[in-house]
Amino acid sequence: MGCLEGKVIVVTGAGRGIGRDIALLAAKEGGKVVVNDLGVDPEGEGADTGPAADVVKEIRAAGGEAIANGASVAEPGPAESIVKAAVDTYGRIDCVVNNAGILRDRIFHKMSVHDFETVIKVHLLGSFYMARAAAQYFREQESGSFVHFTSTSGLIGNFGQANYAAAKLGIVGLSKSIALDMARYNVRSNCVSPFAWSRLIGTIPAQSEAERLRVERMKAMGPEKIAPLAVFLASDLSREVTGQIFAARMNEIFLMGQSRPLRGMQRSEGWTPQTIASHALPAMKSSFYPLDRSADIFGWDPV
Image 1 (cartoon, rainbow, N blue to C red):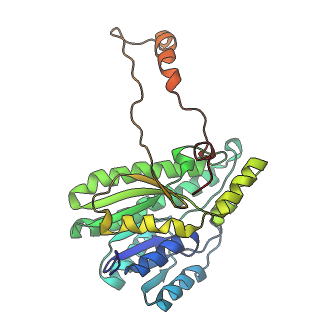
Image 2 (image 1 turned 180 degrees about the vertical axis):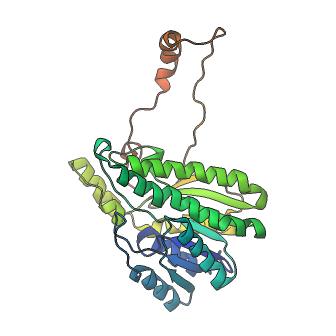
Image 3 (image 1 turned 90 degrees about the vertical axis):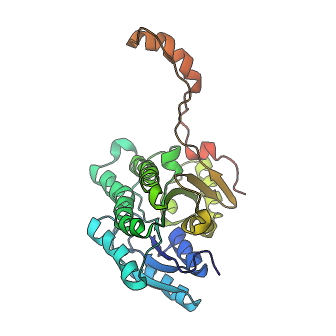
């Protein structure tokens, strides 16, 4: 028996890339899968039900159970319909994998309000809409798991991705809040930050030789390497894991840090702007984080 035997799992953005491989592995592990994909291009335009239908065909050909769903996660009504499709078809829902996403990379001073809001809507609001729709079912059955996809763009930093970084770091806060609020109902919520080549990664411009080399390294990292961690978190094998942030890169898995105090200063009489400059700043400055990007922190070749 697989680790998802008898479980019903919704995977958003499952028509291609990481989501597709999660859906395939979830079905292989015995799960009944709702393969959700609106079928948009990397910037969120258009619609095509073909990719989701193709994944369902592949799952069924291998003896698994799956249905296709083409609803958008970016509006509350359609997001609710995705969860309802799982319950109406299979009688329950056990996990939501919030993987759907788009990119609209722009340097900050050239980023439009529309580009910012559109990315926030798909990633952050979409994750909330999906999680909220499933939360009542999870509460009633006193079990369930959320697997949200974040990014080192938000956890660490990247050029030209203020919209994406804000959304992905917001998802971390959303996941932690869900974990805290729903622990009493045996509901888990965790984040995965993936390193893998995908259509979205392929849209990021490589303007320097170092960036071009990084892109070539990324091409070696297949989305199938992310699926085992996501399926583990979806299954009861992770029953003791909640409120955590993981990163997956080829055969590497990392537990990522969460914000905690680094250094504190106190003055009995209180602070003024001048004493902050003369006393607190010199004491804290050595602990400041530099303006690192994801590639600066993960600077070695994937293993």
